[in-house]
Length: 219
Image (cartoon, rainbow, N blue to C red; front, side, top):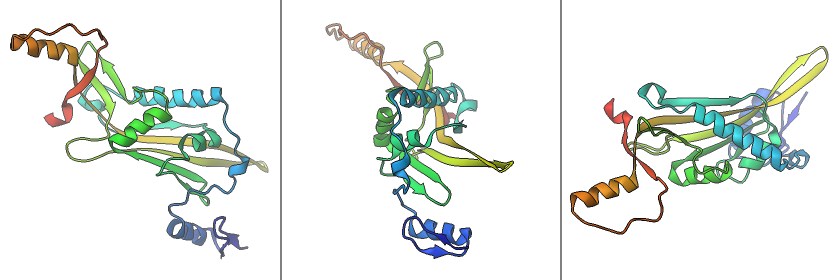
């Protein structure tokens, strides 16, 4: 039995050869041959899975050295059409037709901002503890290198009693760190007090925080 590449129609005598072909000839493929079968997700469905990403990622963020490092979030039932809708337009979006696998990677500060739009939440990547003045956050850039956040979708199958069961599984991998944060308004007031400079009180009382010391520096 011969197998045909969905992207270029070339034929192969085994799945292994077809997989090798796709990995070498179509490694940057974005085309989804069955795209016309994927329905646009409803607004409620989209919000539900955006919220799932945010909740599960934040649960992996902590406030001490033991909570930093590479983390993984797994959603065992995730619709294919939702994943495609969220990530298809991104430059790093890739699809492997043989493995039925999607992948999308975000790296650096610019793509961190893009994820805020995709997940529809400004603060998806951090979790703050005002009592201990520390914050756990998804690390994109530090003093040494840039870090990636990767989303992937794969289809799993179970064949039993002449039936085939299928579902999509999403994995999100990222690097976390923790550090101290400071209220910039309080810091400004302290600097003004030390230099004996008086300025008008700001009308915006909303606290804004910035990382002032990464705990990685203690290692």
